[in-house]
Amino acid sequence: MPAADKPGRDCPRCPRLVAFRSTWRAKEPAWFNAPVPSFGPLDARVLIVGLAPGLQGANRTGRPFTGDHAGVLLYETLARYDFSRGTFDARADDGLHLTVAPVGTIGVADPGSGFQGGGGWHGHRQFSLTGGAPSLNRLFGLPPEDQRPWP
Image 1: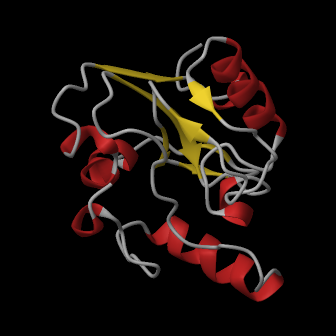
Image 2: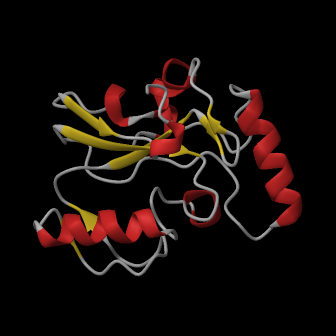
C-alpha cells in the first residue's frame, strides 16, 4: 500500500480504536498496537477483509489475520489454492507472500463488545486497498456470527 494511504500509528479517526490502542499499549507495550496495513498485492481483483482490531492477531503482530486461529484457517486455505508463496508461521516476518488476494481490516469492532457498525467502513476505506488497487472489483468479509448486524 502506498505510504500516503496508510493511517499513522496514532490515527485519531475512530475514538473507540484510539481508546483500545491506548489501553493495549499500556498492557502490552511490545505488541504492534497500531492501525494494521493491508497485506498483499495491489493489483488484486479481490480483497479479503476482517474486522479490526484483531486483539490477539493483527493488534499483536501487525499483520491482518496473523497470530489467531482465523489466520491459520485463512492462510492455510490461501496456500491450498496457490494464492500464496512461502510459509505461514503466524508472524509478520515469516516470509509469506500473497499472490492473488490481499487481506485487510476495517475498524468497526470492539473486542468483547460485539459489532459496533456505524461509520467503520466509511471512516477507514481510504486506508484499505480499495483506493490503491484499480483492478479491485470484489470485497469479501464476514464478521463472526455473534457480531453480525443482521438476524
